[in-house]
Image (tube, rainbow, N blue to C red):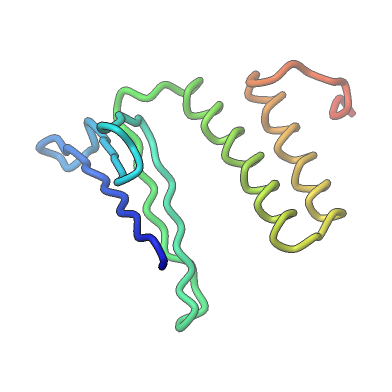
Length: 115
């Protein structure tokens, strides 16, 4: 028997429709959690296109956004590598993520990108 899980996302908007608060929960999670940003991408196989929802709250700092993107890049690399076994492309993608992380001061410089 298969199991079904629901993920619910609630976005509180200000009068200008700018996100003030993002809350999410799922049937496997005890209680709800707050978030300051989210990137949701869904693949529409019928139209062969990606549908996106990208939101962040107005109190998210540039430092938090930089770390969020760095961690998202790393996760995307791992997912891509696992799904495709494209090791060379994953290595190039990982290099970009590290470059981004260094330039945005999320990780310590390795000297690899100083040219």
